[in-house]
Image (cartoon, rainbow, N blue to C red; front, side):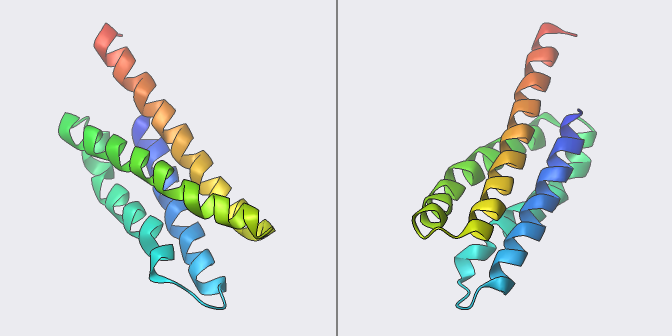
Length: 115
């Protein structure tokens, strides 16, 4: 998979799933929209990523890594409260972010080797 496609899928996943979590909550918190903001930023960076802009690629990697770290606490909260839908949503956001991060790392390795 190409990095810009992985990032696009991840951005859409972050936006859709976090909006779902926000609007489905009985007591929504603005912090639930953090993945939405990150997803929008990733969408804005997608064109530069497709053009293989190295600075944008590194920004996308850092944001993706930070969102993975940031989603660990909501996952733990959903696990502790046995919220199946919450576990599903946050788990999917983490999974899409991890897949995107692995794709970026593989792309950097290939570029470094000159493949």
